[in-house]
Image (cartoon, rainbow, N blue to C red; front, side):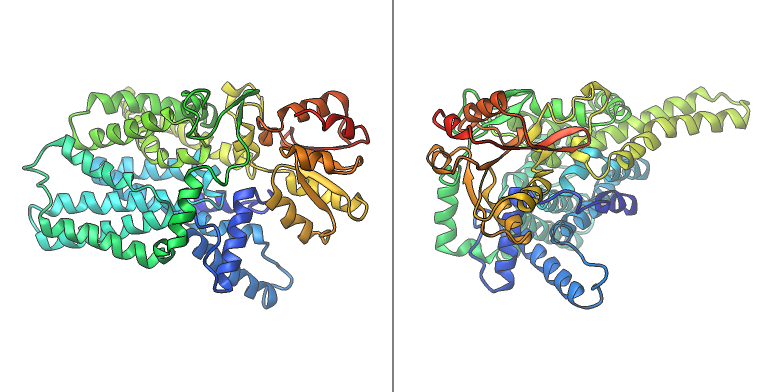
Length: 519
């Protein structure tokens, strides 16, 4: 857990805010003023924690921390760093229930050093809290099932604790189907003698506690305006851009487009390219071991959680790297099973009478390859974890999934450079209005005028010498023609590079007036 925290906190402010994080800042600041009506499409728990963190950072910066200021980037991301680190404890508890302490410790370690887990835990998005409380709820539910035969009173407490965790899960992100997955697992398992069905009282405790905790943690859900806004949101009323770039090709990234949606293989490809090779090898061994032992409750639980995540989420047209976080506890536990099997094979090679020195050398070699090397990878690539590619990625940083890999990294630096050199009242084009507005204000350039590259009308109205910021991760169907023309006819006046990849390119030329006519 300490190792996971150190990896997640390191260089936390090195990347500027992305668009979603700026919305979180605005909502949290609004909470501190007593207004909870912003960012209604997301539950309150994440924003409430950020509000507390921002308030604490403000007090620190005004008092003891005058010489060691805490940036807003750190304050906003810190709650997820903490809960992401604590998730290792939850994964240990659940894994050791099914597989024992060895697999529990290995699972927790793989989560703590896991590249995909660290990537998402460093963002101010709801998925980190969703995973923490979902898997905590699963643990309490599994404990309730185990003790229900011998101690119904204790089982009731576990059911209530599970319900409270599910309530906090819903107050983190509105994904109620995760509650149904644990019901489905025990229904498919079918061992009613060992795991008896819930009594009526148990069900009421579970669902009642869930509802009460959810309402307490997310009371704004009851407001009529919230439901109205959420319906507007799910109907894509707030969506102004369409498209997600995968390996140079644009795909639709919204649920409305069943055809032309993002490729079905996206999540397996992300896992293959963003996971160190030794962990992938352990995962393959673990998958075989899990399938061989599929009639046991633990392996069957992993199979249900693995398949009922990857299948439906792969069929959806909208896909994002952060959604993978809900899948990763299952992946890391399966990989831990594979590691335990590999350690068993290594131990079997040490015959009775083998010199202790050779046995120690073999144990050290296995640990070095499968544990130390993945940990070193996470140390080496920090703080730009989203840009990590294993050797299968062929060093094509920022090429495969630029939106999630870049995630607006480098945009803060590009805006800072424009703010230094732009004349008063200059126009600046981009694709993330909240980020531009936030950093214009921070850098003292509220005079600068922003316009969306996707908005042809605003694009044509901008003066001839406007600045244009182009990001590969912000190329959409609405702006791709214009950006292609700009990139064909002009050279950037400045390129912001991160880890060798072009994060943002700044253009400025009078010929933009001729280019804006086409879509």
